[in-house]
Image (cartoon, rainbow, N blue to C red; front, side, top):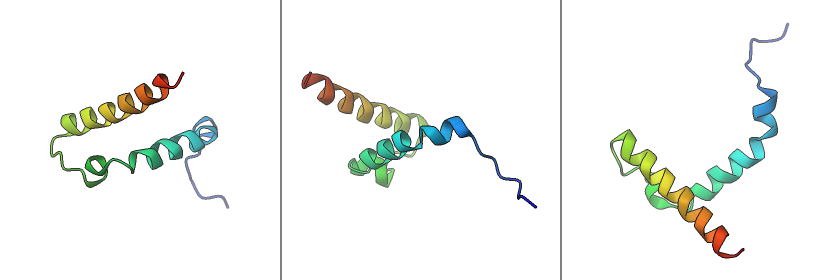
Amino acid sequence: EQPDVYFDEELYKNRFKIEQANGWLDGYKGLIMRYEYLDVTWIGMLLLGFISKFLKKFKHV
């Protein structure tokens, strides 16, 4: 008998991208250690990290 496990095929197809983003975020100590106590400021730090990544990539184009 199969256990009741949720499996999203579309999400699984994008797993590599998600894992890559998580690995990249590991480079930002402030995001790993979670110095921010409020969720809203921590999410803001995440957004700043992604914006920084985007701008660095955009600069090389």
